[in-house]
Image (cartoon, rainbow over all chains, first blue to last red; front, side):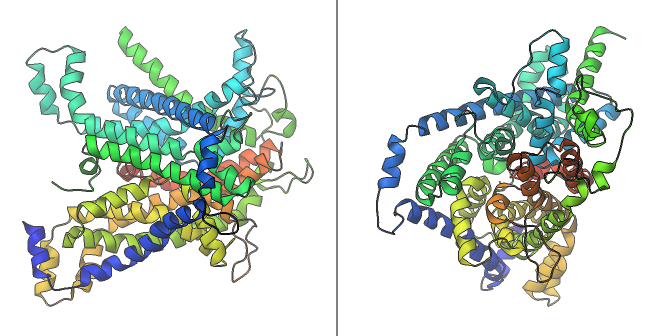
Length: 296
Length: 290
């Protein structure tokens, strides 16, 4: 193998180490140390004595179950709708004339590129109950006006809908690129069997785009879990706890209640959840190969 | 024209409207006079458009008013932090590490897993440590402090992107250079880096956009606007500025906010359209969605 040949030539050479040195320093300062800092904070009190009270507080925190529930609903709702919209759009785009398809690709880039805080601002204008266009349409259809942002029942849905606008293009672009790269001779060969449209999709297209689906699902899930900006601008976690997801709850503990110790304990919980999701994906799929982190 | 073709046209028209209307509405709001903003039924095509929200120092709503011009100091900070982070993350840390991993086949599975996990770390989980680190280094509310925190996502992203590009270039060119007596460091800087220029461009652009759009770290690490002095004082970025108007000031200067919002989103949009063909690849690992 060529790569091995290269590494054999340079066996006693330490260039690889010097090239890696900045990254190692980076890793120690910006990853290893922050993780240590989180454990330190979460296991101490304000005066620096060792304690487990931060974690035991979380165990009986009356709000944490609600926060985790809201986080789960947010992830399921947003990821579900984004995957659905993104995949449908990719399949539709395949059947469009190439000019329309090109225009669609350009247009879908816009929501992705606009800073999420600005997206929040845009949806504040759209959701406005007095002068907003959405309520105008509802009322002209004879439907009652809806208090999108102020009602406890609809607050999370409003955030989800804004997130779907912003992020279904992400799923679309990944799936569309995968659909485009399915070699056409596969379809031609399958045509000889006279399959139905569904059979064609199920047995030819789906296996070919499975890596892209796994990648989109994992990254969208993590992306939604990370979500903070839209919630901050649109709802500020409220009304009540209706939009307080885990990210937001950590921020509240750290920078509103000024308690880095409980916030650090929550951060460790958050990291554990992410580690679990990534670990399960690594275990049951070939995600590292799909992402090109590993070559066969 | 048959029915299925008609359905395809209707669905695609619906998608065009769905994706464009929020942007159109924000734009229309930005060119309305304030009377037209607060009118019912809402005005979809303003008869007397004005661009005052973009350039005029309007004070119509008292202290909590703004125009697009007000965002310039914040844009300077966003720009500076984006550049510092991109240069350090891509050129000084990411690309050399990627080259080392790819060419010397060290680390193997461990490195790739670490990169994957580091990309997945939510910013919220690291706000406590980064706040304490930046305070400890006396870099709070500076471009440098914010740039440090931004390295946490640009470095793993850049390393991963550049690994892909280094895998794709043939090793023979570097080996030929080595035979000619070039040092291995030179083989990296003068030979390999030149062959991955498109990759470096794509990585830098996507990294810069991610920095430009980032909000949470900027919210906790920056407080005051850049005051155009040198050495620089103040480092608040655009997203924090816009959000503070909405959330803290509870401003209703929608025209000015819409103008400032669109104006400050332009750099990301232009760069994103420029880097279009690299997007599908970059998106698959952490670009853009902080």
